[in-house]
Image (cartoon, rainbow, N blue to C red; front, side):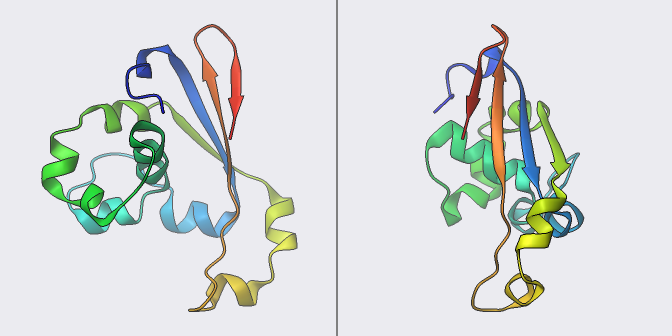
Length: 117
């Protein structure tokens, strides 16, 4: 978890596939739980800061009382890796049972040290 070290993170690079970029790559204000539920950066930030992601984390009261979530979101870069798209059958992406979106993320610290996740 990075809760007390956000200032030491230069950026978080998230590599994903095109459907994730089109659906859940969101910048700017997130005004309600539905906005947060459809924001890859929000989900990653909460996971990094608190070690888990539950329904409570999407609520307005939680988001408003934790400004470090948006601080960390502002440090995120999302890019596409076309290999993820070609290895994930489209049927899994649209299936109501499987909903698969591959991601990898890397944290670059101010010290230039990289942490892969």
